Image 1 (cartoon, rainbow, N blue to C red):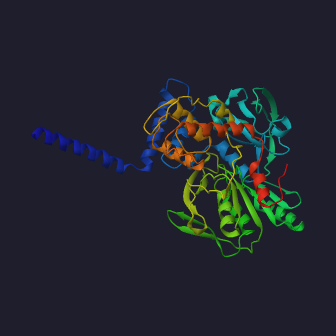
Image 2 (image 1 turned 45 degrees about the vertical axis):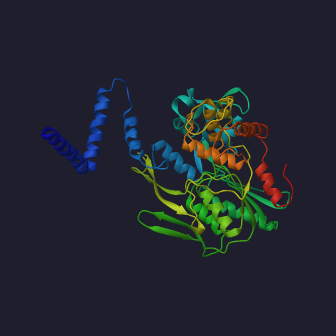
Length: 463
């Protein structure tokens, strides 16, 4: 017994010394430790390694304990981000997102190298300068697409809806980013598409509204589908054109201070429909939420992404060492509405299927097991269910394990489609999942959301 007490006392003293040592560590000590580690690896690691990669890895490690939106930005990416936010960049002129085996083209900018080379929405970039996108990862592949003006880049592209692969030699140019498109539909409705809230967007919106006013058009569709957000100051300037002076636009809650942004202009009265989908995020959600709250706009489409946090970008050595992006607050919409990880539900739910990854759909596991599954079970049907729900935008892990998270998301799906499943993966649910994706394949190129918006304005459909 005495030995046991002595052992416990020794262990406690040892643990106390570790805690005391950890508390005594300061940034100077940590900096020296990192320098020593990098030097040792550089000298002794059995393979060749780039010292800059080690330093980048150290930077990235700092942000691993923070949220997904806080991150280190390497110098080349930082330069591209800054160019992008200011309305131009040097590259080939594509709007993209990650897919299973490459870079999915969502759109191309007008008069860009990509457009001139024949790249179209739905194409997938598989290699850049002979290097597989899958082998180096999405972000590094995007870096390879950037470069000096008038320099050459070679890409292999799988064309939309086929297995045909084309190799294209493109010349990088300074691409002007057209972040706003507008037109008049059927002489009665104004249509504005906001691609991203980059610098100058509010001025383009002003031009669009002036054009509509000249034509005495008071019904407007604002399209923020696939809009990832952008500059907060730009969406505030846009809202000032719609919301009456004195109304609260957003409240930003941070660690040190809460701030409120108030509308400062007269605003305007238009009949509005805002088109949204699961890729409408951040500034797009600020716009949609405010227009619904103050202007009785109807949100049409699918639930938005749910990004309600604010980030600041701080450069290192004027950007020579890159920069870092840190989440510094959460914004709250009028009426106290929080949207972070929640999103905005539409007033009129219409699916368009155009934000689905059709390469992923081709790899779905079959759900052919003729049995019902309950929480806690494992099986191929569960894996297939998780694949399909994830592709539809449900937040779920794809591991074939029917855990609590999988069951909660399945219940949401069943409620939405009127299935009495109570969180059980039954045959009716499997059939509905299959019907959903069969329908998606059939109507991929049809814009049902825009059509429904026009129907709300009682002028039929644009085709």
